[in-house]
Length: 279
Image (cartoon, rainbow, N blue to C red; front, side, top):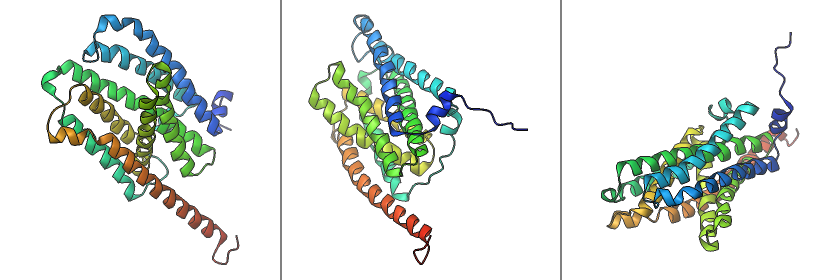
């Protein structure tokens, strides 16, 4: 007796990976998140400025939670949720730990150079919550679903890593359409591409999506809290270089990644052909 559960046409559509399906998913997330953010705008006069807890909760946490719930619902509808959080099948290389260390190091430095005397516990807690939901939703989308779609399409890991980083950058390019000036948006796209690539390397080397989620969850709060209430001294000045360092390190690691994956591809093809070059 066949006990196989027949997949719905919806699930079968997403099971057959194509790069444009990953794009559709990313754009669909934006189509939900951005209106959710705009719906919160009327509350702005009643919640104070960016230093208020209500500002963080209403304008940042709530819209992202809405987007995260949609992503969880999507994953449940296609049967991907459990496997997304299971051990990843493709191993990483030791040098990929550099991405994890660099991102974590500057997150710690930024947290250590915030002027906490100017903040309240509730504001810090709100930002930590914001970081957690941001890290969960954006990593679930780009390092979870996008990676799965690209791998199921039979693409190389080069294509998987680049698509994951590029679509992550696309999420932040949407800031251009909500009033952010062009130059800061372009710089943000550059940073988020290489940060996203570092998160892909974190996924590879740890073989669990929890690593990029937690790294991401500590990145956004440390950046924004230090930006609003920066400390003084050499440590704070050095910590503020974090985004530049991530871009530079990410660019170097991207070159190493491209060379490494191409060499691995050549070895695999040579092994398939056999010692005499005959398949």
